[in-house]
Image 1: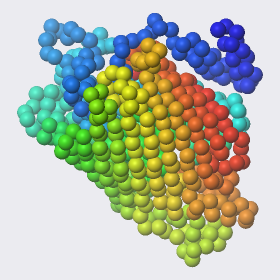
Image 2 (image 1 turned 180 degrees about the vertical axis):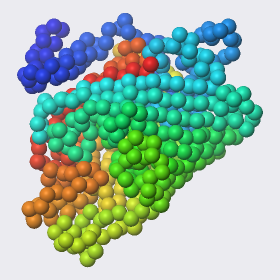
Image 3 (image 1 turned 45 degrees about the vertical axis):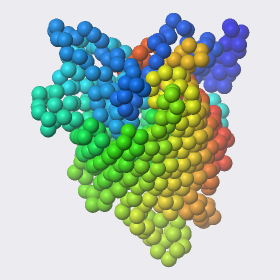
Image 4 (image 1 turned 120 degrees about the horizontal axis):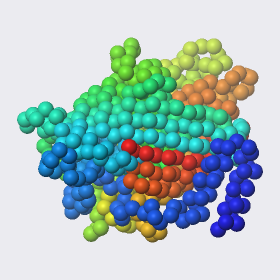
Length: 525
């Protein structure tokens, strides 16, 4: 093993040059990949860490009742501690909403029960989690230049059960407050190697360079045994809509969070940008739901200002309407769970056409104002299906997934995107809490954006920016291949090596194809 490991380190050093940050990435990546991913001494109990994000509190399917904090309870109390993923409606019914450190962060605490503080808080209806995510990324091959960056965030989430906290009556049953704030830092590697449309890093951008950027603050009321759920407040639309349990197991930002290009539309912005809005979800049977949402549309670059706290922005007169239908079947005696979703949004704002002026010509050369298009639409289809189950939980097995999304090409630089993916746990090599996955993404840029770029090129004018940044050349499409392995070191701490190969970075042929390597460290305290 020493010989190939030494060779790999030598190759990495030659590719990366002198900066120590590259050698650290390669060393960690090589050690993980060539030592069986991690020593077996770190192996944990044979249930996937993803099980803590199950949709239904059904003991016949999700039978792990171990609490997220330790027993016995402090101060001589003997009240039962409800597991976190059973207690908070957002875990069970969003689907895949709060707390923020569900998939792919997990809900284990690295520091256990905080010396008894967690049990004491949870019995009084207060749920707190802190998360640190740090990633190192570099592109030794391709792009505008070869470089490396560090990016990450610190996040804190607070969820309050008002019935427990106030010792209230039936009116407070299922009544919650959810809050999340983050502090982000770092540089965007993709922008440095010439791709302004995409980000290979999962965490970076839109955090405003402030101490605590508000992501969400909203009330949730769950009624009729969770068959009806109503939320209102400051909400990122993707917390509820066009989201899946597996997307943030991948690192690429087009994958993580809700679907692209929808989340790049002004009326569909997601994490870490919230919107004043409300969501009503009806789940008449356990395998079907229908959701509707109404959100204010901010005409500014940042919803709520750079901090996320400035809710009284001017120009909030337009609305974005979201609708989604979901089917969540379970097949066979192993309850092979699937998620099948179709949805769309309509924003009644007016947006500039990317190409046409008021007379139908290219506004970049005519000098005439751009034509205003009334309304902006997006639609999505998302599915995933477990094929083989290894244990409890919606991701504990071999899972295949696919997505397709569309946006109005006259006002969005990306018109459509498709994804196929396959994921599994480390069950076969006795690492049941690890995950491995591969995905392919194809993104198609809109004809209106391309026509604008050709007009600018012919006139010798600079390219214009849109919702996917400013291109370096005439765009067409972009392909991304991604492979990752997430290894749980101990509950609450994981390491993720990731490789991405980007064809036509930024959707153009200006720069050579990019090979990007990353190493992410994630801790939920």
